[in-house]
Amino acid sequence: MGMGGWQEYSVVDGNAVGALRKVDTTHVPLSHYLGTVGMPGVAAWYGLVKIIAPKAGDTVVIGAATGAVGSAFAALAKARGCRAVGIAGGTEKCRYALEELGFDACIDYKEHSDVQAMSKALKEACPNGIDGYFENVGGWIMDAVMLRMNAFSRVALCGMIAGYDGAPLPMANLALMLINRMKIEGFIVSEHMEVWPDALKELGTLVGTGKLRPRETMAQGIAAAPEAFWGLLKGKNFGKQLVKLI
Ligand SMILES: NC(=O)c1ccc[n+]([C@@H]2O[C@H](COP(=O)([O-])OP(=O)(O)OC[C@H]3O[C@@H](n4cnc5c(N)ncnc54)[C@H](OP(=O)(O)O)[C@@H]3O)[C@@H](O)[C@H]2O)c1
Image 1 (tube, rainbow, N blue to C red):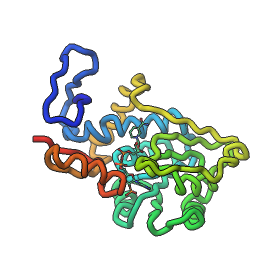
Image 2 (cartoon, rainbow, N blue to C red; image 1 turned 45 degrees about the horizontal axis):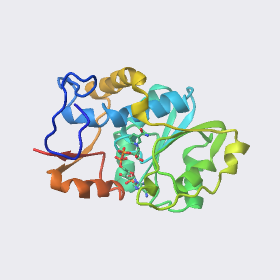
Image 3 (cartoon, rainbow, N blue to C red; image 1 turned 90 degrees about the vertical axis):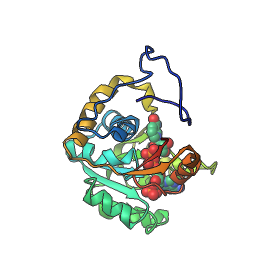
Image 4 (tube, helix red, strand yellow; image 1 turned 30 degrees about the vertical axis):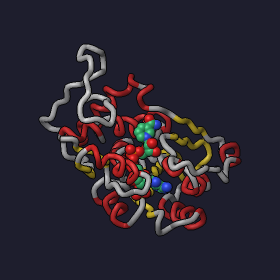
């Protein structure tokens, strides 16, 4: 396993630390090392465990709940005694979040499609308010979540995909950060290599023991890569988006 570019072949120095990692496919399928048992899974782990740092009984919420990062979140949160609530696009993704990923509730933002409707749905799904929010999306969904955050709640800022097409992402409810004495912290998972062994051990065990069965969407060939990437910004992927090169 290694970090390459958008290319079919690359030459790397096999002796350089971290350039290539041998992975064990006895219990974990190879492709999952690019998803739940790889960088995206560790991102979910870091944001939840190190930034949100939940206590048993806390309610934690995540956007893009069924994607590569979101897929591991509920299992990690449930293992820490939390109520896990997802936000995802469409009834099929929400059903999968509940039935396969272990979320306690999932809100379809295409059905609850403005701040008021989302905030109302969050009130029902999170009767005790929200203690931790894992942000993958940004924009109006974040505005709605902010309205339900508890005092001394934490936000792990992992991504703001709603703005990756260049759209501005103004925040309407910034004052609530002060009123609720909130902590909001962004992170880049590759800057926290110290947590990777612990995170991968937990994630690998979840997948290896069959407790977590993440979905994947596979595009064929490098020529399909740009469209596959573009699809991420429109929610066309279901689970981790992969491109099979050969
Ligand atoms: N900080 C880090 O170190 C780090 C590491 C990895 C990933 N990330 C970030 O984590 C986020 C998730 O990445 P991923 O690779 O796991 O992608 P992903 O969740 O597998 O795919 C992206 C998902 O985002 C949702 N989405 C896209 N545009 C949206 C919009 N305008 N409004 C609402 N939802 C939208 C779609 O899900 P729905 O169909 O459910 O809407 C889409 O399937 C991204 O923001 C990424 O940049 C950050």
